[in-house]
Structure formats: C-alpha cells, structure tokens
Image (tube, rainbow, N blue to C red):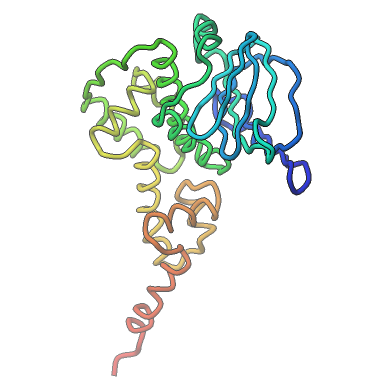
Length: 278
C-alpha cells in the first residue's frame, strides 16, 4: 500500500517472513505522532533527516547510522527533528523472538550506534520487497535478533565455533530441495540446530550464506535450459524461482547478463551446427 502526496508517503505490507508483523516505510514532514504503543517491537532506521521521540519520559533521537528499538507496550510519540522532515524504514517484530525481560533494557537504552546492526537491517529491507527471497529475509532476521540480544545484554557476543559437519548436512539438504526450496525454520528443525548457528556454520564453511548457495544452484539448473531454447518464464518455474523477474534479477547479478541475452548468445553456435554438410 502506498498513500500520500509528493512529499509525504507511506508504504506498508506484511511479508511472508515469520517474525515480522509488518514493514512500514514512510516519508513525513509535518506529521506528529501522538503518544501511542504497539504490541510488537519497533525496529527503526532513518535514511534521511532525523526523528525525535519521547519514551518513558525521556527524549531520544534517531538519525544517520543510529538504530532505535522501541519495546512493546511502552508509550512513545515521534516527529521530525528537522524542517525538511524525515524518511524512515520500520520493522514491527513479533515479541516472541525477544524475551520480555529485555523490555526494561530497551526502555533504558532504545538507541544503538552499531554499524553491524544497521547494515544487517538495510540488507533485510533490501530483500523484503521481493517475492521468492523469504529464505534470505529469514536468515537476515535471525542475525538481527542475535545482534539485538547481544546489545541489550550489553555483553560481547560469544565465540562462534566452527561446525563443518552441520554445514555439510545443510548443503546436502539444500541440494535435495533446490527446486522446491526450504524455510530456515524447517531446515533448523530437520537438522536439530539453532537457525543462527546454522547460518553461521554454513557461511564459515562455504564462504556464502545458505540462501546465496541455493540461488546459485538454481542458476546452474537454469543455464542449460536457456541454452536449449526453453523460454525464460518456463525456466523460472522449472528451476524454483518465484517468477521470471526473480530469475532475471539473480541471473544478471551472478552472470552479468540477462537470461534472454544468455540464451541468444547460443544462436550463432546453433546456426553453425545446423548448417548442411557440403
């Protein structure tokens, strides 16, 4: 949903990603939020301008690389801190994924200047608008939850141990489910592993996260079908992509060309092979 004029805009939707209640993107100039509260955690970044708000009778601000985490059930307000307004991106998170005991800590410290967390949030927002990227979004969300827990506890993250056996079992599972796909929750259940540990073990062993590996396997399946003359929309359906744009986006990202251009590159070769012998 997109509403508003040229200067004030809102876009909101509910992604098919467990743990995210709603995604909310907005550009506001004069709007002032009254005191209100949510049932979910509110994870906020500001892409342009600045926001100020009151939480538990204390004023806070968000701008630049600052991340704000507003706890559920605690009233807050909000408005632009500059004349030209602000542009923000918000994730409303299911409270089941962060312990209720952390609400008090978030009230005391609702803002974090943490480049790693900010980058992970931006990466998640980049994946969320695209259908077919649910595994990537769920993986990035799991890492965000993990980082938020560390920050709220105020402790250094524990040492991450290598687990090559788990990484290889996950690769085998992805290879067996390349076309139909698998959710992070299902993979973790099958392998009896914590989702975050699963992602980290795989990335450490193979140098890429599970969702990226799965996409690369689908691209490998798509290439010979394209060269064989199958239309791109059929190739997308056959190899596990959500639709043709999903295939095109990743094909171009990995191979530097579109599926159509890739398929046409074989035309000359096919023509030469089909010339009659003299």
